Image: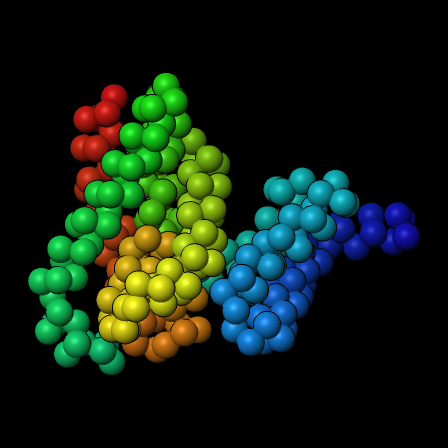
Length: 235
């Protein structure tokens, strides 16, 4: 089995296949759990792949060489979020002012709270620069982190954990808060939990998904503007 695995591991298509298989298993689990947020397909896929890489001793660079096609599709998938947004354009126009207020508040709270926690534990420098853009979508957050002098790897990890946490917690929390407006629910999740949250919002309701995509995109823009200012304030 060791020899067989060594042979297969040299083929980049192996890791693309494993990625798709892990997500498929996650989807089956999500359906079996009747849409429970705990059984998020993306989270399950991440866990399965992490365990597989750890057990086989496979370096991440080797995995990424085969799975980079999925990474490439992240850009087109993000752009494709514009379609449901266009379909909900009249609703967006009607709620423009509340959306802007929520966007600024959500983005600022995300960055400032992270800086305050790090400050309380006496952590600064590179870690602050890595944490500042954590609520932006991964591609944007990593770019911001590099410009601020942070660690792109740490930023990617924090963004991943932020998205997973948001995807798991958002739906139960918003239900407890009795928030019925799908626009507000989706926008809040998109601002706070970027891609993972947006994917979860689409699973719940199409309108929520559209506004989550809007929140994710706009928050990336606002974070790019505010992150250097907030970081300079705390450093």
